[in-house]
Length: 264
Image 1 (cartoon, rainbow, N blue to C red):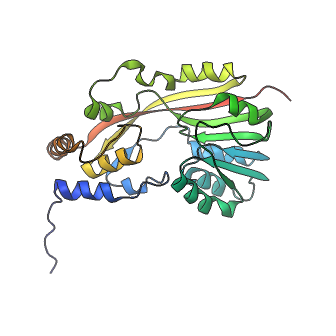
Image 2: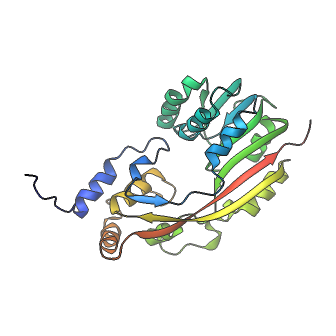
Image 3: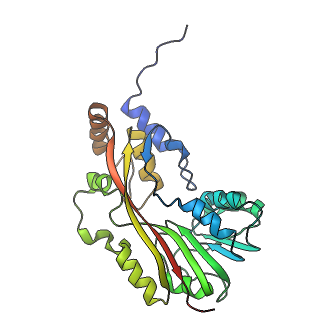
């Protein structure tokens, strides 16, 4: 006879969320604990279609390589003859190397704010999913004339309901540099022509405090310096709120960005 299951306590859940490894961009651990609506454009599938037409492709800030791996699997045998990816965080770079090597992708360790370590005009496709900061001049430089930048960016004030729960109200300009209109202007100033730009606001739900803890440990720029110890009172209050009222609801912002380098 099975023993009855006891509800997990606040301390149990916090310990669980604090113990999960944070390497890579695989979010499968959140299944059943948090949900996020997906953008209508299906970025990874759309990237796969573009990879089948590319001859030389570069994925910037690839994380653990999970999104590029998915796209390459969808692209099947029609992968580019030359494919590379960059990543600045060593644990992610190691994970991406193991995941992408079977596809023939060279993963290069490169800091997010450093020049791209590639020759001018080396690629006809540059992609990125959720870059911290797009370096438009470098993206333009490594694209061939006629080449494409295809990416999904995080928009302004993404999941700010959760951020402001911990940090309090933040000024509107806090993430204004992520606004699609600002990024359009920056890309055009670097010499790119915008061919597609779409934005969506998407519902996010956190079903337990373990999911909140793991999310803030994984996406470290949301609440800078986050630790369980530093925010224990707020975590406990949020745990009690979720237990009594149901999931904590926030909204992510995403935009699809496609641009072309003028030329042949």
